[in-house]
Length: 263
Image (cartoon, rainbow, N blue to C red; front, side, top):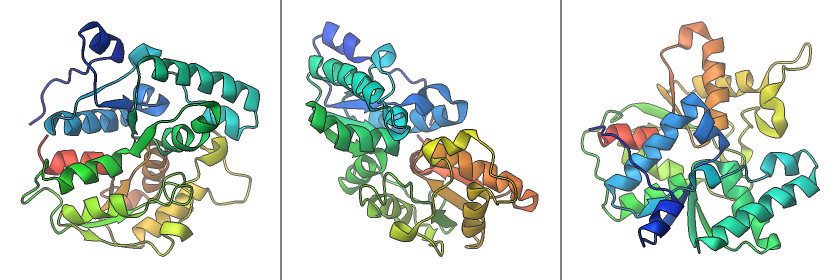
């Protein structure tokens, strides 16, 4: 049952003499995009339900610098990264969870070279751990028996080799996991990478998210599961492209778990 969310910032925890076990790195999309905010809330509800001690940075959180780095501006990336590392180390953060594979990859793999050593988990990894420990139970959930296909985020799958955690969660929903013809290491990008999310396709070419949505719809699934706010946006827009397929839902793994557990 949904209740009002109250999440403390690291500054508030320090003022109260508390030391959270986990820092929830919300990310730009999870903070500002209305659709992605729902994913953020689902993750927070799951953490609260499992009694995970966590906090956010709030206004102290800024972009990880990932877009700057991918665009080739290494100087800007290092400035942003070092500012974030200084804040994280100031709060003595050890463990970070994030719902964005781009943030996950950058903090996990790029920050150590600048002195930022943290244990970093994607939200599907942490939620899977919590379910394995019996901290969330799903009995006769809303997705039991439904066909669900999972779109692998590039920075979770190919970049970091994590394919199983999200799939294990779908299986725990008692749903039928249906793989696309291109999945896991052979998965196709949603089309948002490299700032492509903000431009139109070249003339005469099919948009990547439309092609990827065709892969998803070909499975006959009722739900397209995502693990990235950008993938969620691209796949949602792709489904809208096919008017007759409006009944297909695009949801983040965290939303599926939260809904099935009635959180």
